[in-house]
Length: 421
Image 1 (cartoon, rainbow, N blue to C red):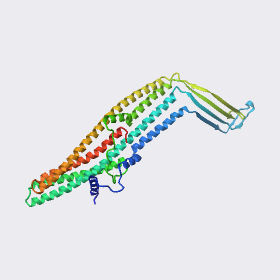
Image 2: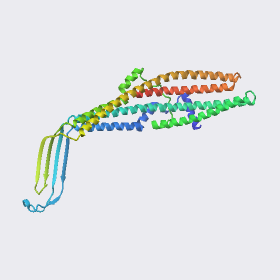
Image 3: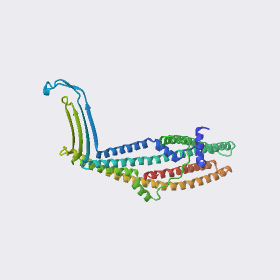
Image 4: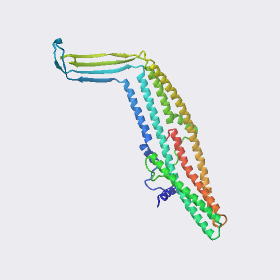
């Protein structure tokens, strides 16, 4: 069996609803596989991990710091007789331990923590959005492969049917039972069907390549797609869910809160800062043999920048501009989500209507084709009528395959917008 016929056979089984071979990949398995290997999702997760690490760094600003430092060396000193010391070898060494606990920073530490926390929430929302989008993309790639296989099987069967019609037309022409026109029309339709078959083979190759790119594995054997996932029952429900759970909107809102925390952090630079400091130090042989200096101090250190040449004011103005930009981003995200949800919901409604119409069309076209075949067989109609009926039946089957797949794709797209698996 050639590769093309093998693919066509697989698609034919799917069209006829026959069971697939054991070990076939299901749509949930394809989604799970993509989530493990997709580079875009891995990148968004890494960014979320980085944001979590920055939150840890910000929280460390309110904790005490302990710094231990020391030095040791060897050298020679020559005091020229002062203090009774001449040229002498010395081994200077020193050590110090400092503990610093921030007491007040004008709210800057807590603002930095809030900003990092909201940035982490934004990164997590973006990762969730990437995951939802990937799920939708996998579903689309999965359904597209199955649809392409089914369309290839239909087109292959059509070529075989038209080849038989052309053969019969040639026999009738030779026997004088039909005009040359019937034979030419049959051959023309056969040539057109063969060209369509070549395009269908190209569509199969492209869909399989895209599947491998999205999922990270070749679609060697796929189970028929499951029924469309559960979606919100009404447009209002979908809109409410999207405004509450949309990853895009949640990320924008978290970024806005992070920008507001940035304003507080910038304003804190105008205020003084205080820290409790305790230190202990020991020194030996720093100036001359036998020298020692040991001490312990505990106190409060303060810092207040009274003039910075406009640096702090500039940072505050920049932070306010960031807030305005973030507010605009939230408004834009809200509008885009609203538009996308309405569009996705309408696509679902349209897909349902189209599927019902395509089902009726396919059944009617198949019934008409059977009738025309019988009429042509007994000579009541010319061969061109059979060719037209074959084309209409094939177009109806095409529409039905596409409508079934589109219903699944549209449901996953809507759920991706409302963060619903």
